[in-house]
Image (cartoon, rainbow, N blue to C red; front, side):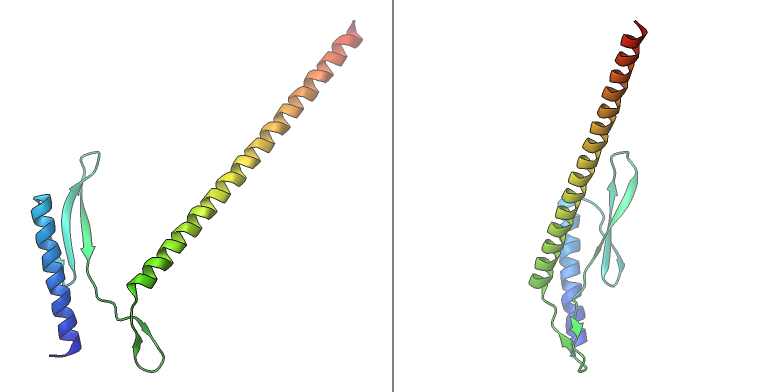
Length: 129
């Protein structure tokens, strides 16, 4: 048995296990829709039916340039994903702070214009007397 056959067997075993667990736990149909995919129905808040699609794969890794692969490292991928999400959250926070600062500046400018207009109106009223 070759490596590919073994990988497929492992993938199929895991997919069957996931299918069984989800079917039992959710008391719902879990449908095999592809060689590496299962689908299960769901209902959104508005009562509309949709399907979750669960895919199982065994990644080989990245090509190393000499005809082989550098093995896939799920731990490194998880760390990279976490760092990426933290960076995005930081960027969103910075953007929100910048927007809030911009809104505050606009509010101060509006207030300054209103004060200036009020002073001008008072000066006109004093001159008119």
